[in-house]
Length: 385
Ligand code: SF4
Ligand code: SF4
Image 1 (cartoon, rainbow, N blue to C red):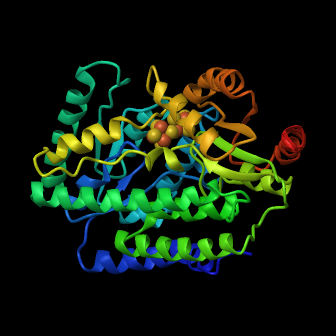
Image 2: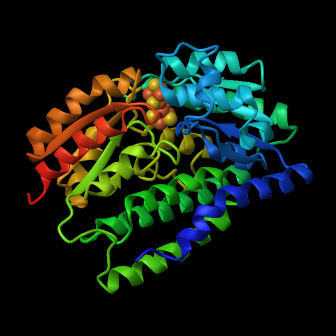
């Protein structure tokens, strides 16, 4: 049984575009962001609307490849393609863009984007094992605050920052609660629906509305779970998806796993639970910018070296979600995730004795049959564990 609220969630992208148009007419500012490290609290505290600009569709890639090299991650090409073809309303409406020095492809792509929008580049430390890393990131947040104030013509107060922290924490908590519904066995929500609901949060013009909608969805899922219903066949093997971010348009692996009889019960990537785990400190005595800096720097992305947090998180999730197998999805030419795969797969095997598979692909459908064959064999292997 599928929750009725999923129909509303699915329509949210279109609804949010309309809401964004209204907001722009009312002179609200929009801040576009491409990465989980972009601190949304600062945009909110500036009275602006933060929106996600991460490209998850194949369509704009051909245009991007006229400028960018073809052997680049599809996420970078899709994001750039949307911008240069003016086919993403969220990019069009953005008054200011926050970028970060994460992977090479992204940071060099941002240099080209300067031609289209005002961009501020934050310099992300490359690891968290140095005592100076948090201090460095805090300084970057202070510079971003100044740039937002100059560009948007506002003052970002400590009080506004504190309120934004509380709002973002509530959003993280509700999204985590939703995600944790699939710790139940059988899982009550299809992986594709879970992905849709989580991905949608990046486009919410009003975060309060988004939080209320997810609470409504959770209520419905609780009823489905209480009646013992599930979208999956009894005994469907439980899969954890880790690796590069996935969204609607780039969900082919999730779709194939579920078509092959698996249940994607956990999304570890930064489009999943990775960004819901850490809350910013709400203590009134704490400097709010420092609280935000500490919270974001804990995101265990493979662009960090070393990246122990990813393994600690993976371990917890494999146990909590009773995972039978792990799929490490890496986008072609995403060097950091592709290289980290070796350690991920060794860790999963040595610590939990469960199987894993790496799937390297792009946003096109050219390898669907090949992927289906590999996924089907993997699901069969982990069935009946
Ligand atoms: S995978 Fe890492 S660099 Fe890419 S969007 Fe997520 S947090 Fe940012
Ligand atoms: S998926 Fe990898 S290469 Fe692509 S933008 Fe994210 S970190 Fe960079």
